[in-house]
Image 1 (tube, one colour):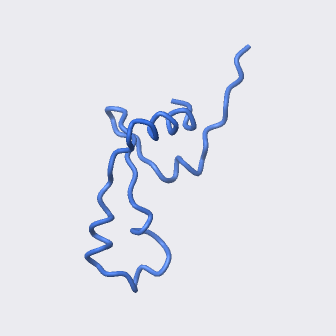
Image 2 (cartoon, helix red, strand yellow):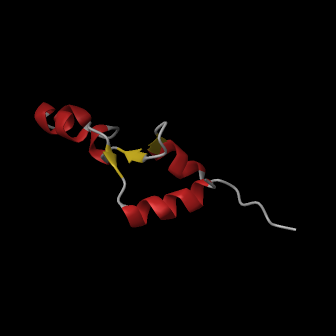
Length: 66
C-alpha cells in the first residue's frame, strides 16, 4: 500500500500552476509588509511572475503531489 503525502499548503499559497504545467512564482516584495514606503517602480518590477527553475520546480512538484 502506497502512502499518500499531504500537499504543502504554504507552497500552494505562494505559487500558481499554469494550464501547461509550469510553476510560476512572484517576488515576495510585492505583497505585504510596509508597501507604502517602497518605490512604486520597484513594486511594479517585482509584480511580474517568473517560472521556477528546473531543480526548484521538481522539488515543488514533489511537495504539491503533482
